[in-house]
Amino acid sequence: MEDHVVFGKKKAKAPVKTSGKKKRSRPIAKKVKAKSVTGKPKKKTASKKAPPKTKSKSPYDTVWGIVRRSRKGVTVAKKKKKTGFDANEIRS
Image (cartoon, rainbow, N blue to C red; front, side, top):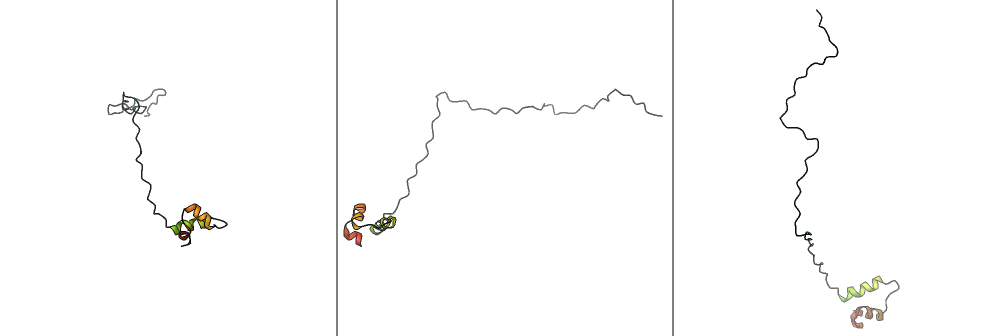
């Protein structure tokens, strides 16, 4: 008792159960906010920060900075011209 095999005929497939919704082949578009009718949007301005306060330099620090930056040295006359100090302030 052999089973007869018939070529060319396809067996019926069992139906596949679905949840009732079809899968979308492309993504759903995002909602876009409507543009205002008034025109260009207002620009936001960044808040400006105050620069940090620096301590005032002593006369010694001012003169020493001039001497340190010079290559060939500085005369008393050049120190007076750059700082506005008199000779006593420069010497001390």
